[in-house]
Length: 510
Figure (cartoon, rainbow, N blue to C red):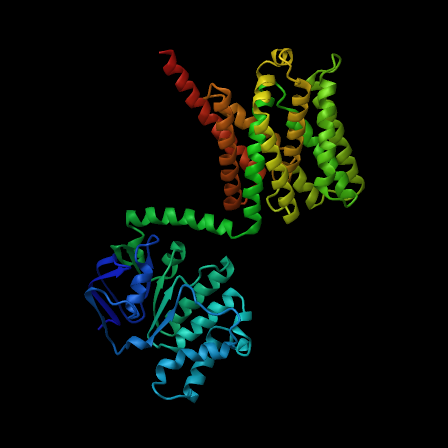
């Protein structure tokens, strides 16, 4: 007879049926993975198998000499007081309580089993350490050893790798496989990790209230609903993995704010035929950052005032009849770039920091950079929104705006200063060579479809953030440069919007 036989069981949670008419069995040596969406009844089913939540319909039968109190269990979350004083050995040994009955003390056999299981899981040298002082991966090994002490036939594991880093997770899966194959202990594991499920499990139960699938892992791979589920889970797992790294959180947070600022300012710059100011100021920023690196000074503290001054100077030079805007940009940008390269060649050389400034890196931002960047980005957004109507007026018709009393020079300077700050903030991730793309692409793309200033502004803002997120995600998944990935996504969006705009214009022409 099977270790566990479930016949048409239905289980309720808080008065609502979460598992309905479910039948399956667990044989000795099986490795069954239970998968499904959140709320599909996976953890509730595990509690029923443990005898903690009896089904209101159907029956769960134990066979092959298996007793209810002889099932090893590793819960999803173990509620333990943070200051609870217990050694690793004491925790593992507590798994033998089911063999004690009314006897008050552990036997020599119990102690031997505890030490053997610690040896099996590679934690024997930790037996005198305090449980609360261990890492997450070490704690899971200890709790798994405790579960092994409670059984010789069946382990129930409820998402045992939750919160563990990828390396520790891989090691833990290998331990489970070793226990299953070498110790001949059947394993039932609730998991969201589809890839590992397919790799290690012998059988799969896919729950969605009832059983969408029950069979071998090989059979599961041929089911369309399973493939759809994998794709969704893989995307979610990738996202959760990314969010587990602080540098990715920083990249998304700061990058989104900078992209938003760039898009808003970019609309005015593109419409005023001044879009290459971003490229020019980025070169100035590179020169300033090179000098800061050579002098071992705070990069942003040096670069921002230098680039702001350059932006103001650029406006005044471009206003001259002798030097037009494009020539002024070329003059200042190439000069600053040359100075930066000279400083680098004479001091630090082409080190990692300099490379990051040129091409960008999602790893380049420190905690202080993040705080500083968030503060300045929010300030840029507030100022832009506050003076939105003035910015629209000088962008649409600067001469008329001047005639109505608008101080055009002041607001042109404001746009230049805000652009300068945004450029410096974005260089950390995008690099000096690519940061101008955040200014140019969203505006040009949006104008392919939208015909109002507000429409272009709003779509540019949304599009810029979306492209940033997609680009950084591609960079993470495929190990490509972050800045280049963002630009490629922007190029793809420009192509898509161009087609949509062409079709829209054709339909309107009809």
